[in-house]
Image (tube, rainbow, N blue to C red):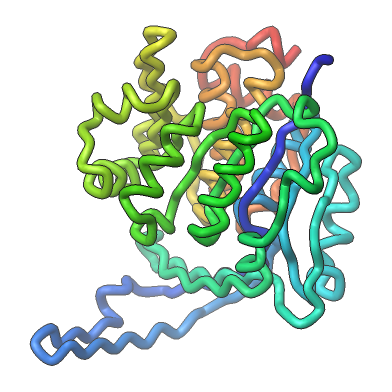
Length: 326
């Protein structure tokens, strides 16, 4: 069988995105000695977008013509606020979701200041039920999947899904992201050992090293492929098995409007590139291209682009178009 589907695990959430016209440092009062903190941020704008790591990743995978299945838990507002109808527009996104009528779908409240620093508050809601979600009872044939991504959500669920993916023999990318400080060192090392790919940004990779007490080289020995995204400095892809250690330049953007979901776009492009048969280097470049589309507009799923747009941006940035995109 020619496996072409990606299994997506992570959060499905509503993103409430706001702008603050000053720097957060100007709005903070901290009394360290008495352990007192106060911050008043008055947002100048607010929009509500469809978001969450699993939602964002699936959206951009579908835009690239690849099929994916989302597994997880949502709340009573998943239908009433339009998220289900939004995903229903894409015939290459399959929703395997449990709806909890007594809970809300997860929500993320993001405030961007004038330096593009972000203040984030997250409410898990129904997402916290993912720890009870059984992939093994839902998946009839694990061979349907080319790859999976175990992306950011609550830690117990990520640990649970890593164990199930290993039992099902489905290779997966591990994306611990913002919840890294909540992992125990034991759980973190255990999942990294199970994963085929570890992806993080620079700050997160430093936390991984601190948590695990492992050096960069020791982590490179622990997992076949490591990707470290570095914002405007591009990304690093390392594979000891394939003797690869490339720095990938980032795709140029004219203006950063909102960085929310850019990392999810990178992951979407990268995984879609692998499904299409691209090399690690070209898959990372495709990830960078998709990430560049996202930061130039508001939210993680508002972008409108075609495969031709992707090819044009790829050629503008890297000087060629991979045959897999043609």
